[in-house]
Image 1 (tube, rainbow, N blue to C red):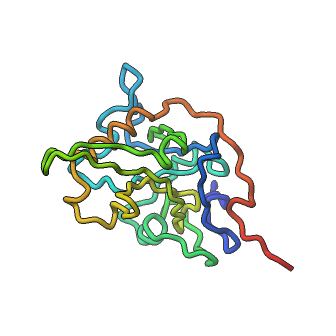
Image 2 (image 1 turned 60 degrees about the horizontal axis):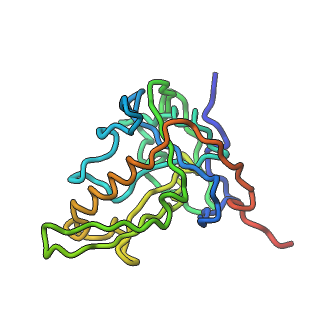
Length: 213
């Protein structure tokens, strides 16, 4: 019987990956609940991304390299006895994790769709939105890709938005306005890739702790 891949689980000698915009051939993979995620014009369907009124400050993705696009088929069972541990709890660096059990914690779902983003298209991008609910001033905010490994998947990354150095995840809802969310949503949709890209293999030095003897 197929088991959950070891290569997806965090290891005690791993560390958080720091992204730079020199990494041109790094890509992020995203799963969708729709098998076909793109419309007839080749654009990501509007239903795939959250509406501006919904939770939008932290979008889950997976870094391609060790993680392969077919790994998007692994689905955590919710409700499940360990759903929060594997799918929602961030891994603590240096710690060991439990192994998920097929059929109890996780299953393969071949009906999921998928799409991709180039990491450097999102990381560091500056977007501008006009706040029509306030005084009409133009607001500038920045996209960042942050490596946020989970107990069940080391390669999990978050797309987040920042006002200066303030993470929108930590801001009151009104400060991250619906116009900013609409601008970010349109940008993400425009830059979504339908076909799996050719991506760069990861150097183990990027995610392992170097020990000095």
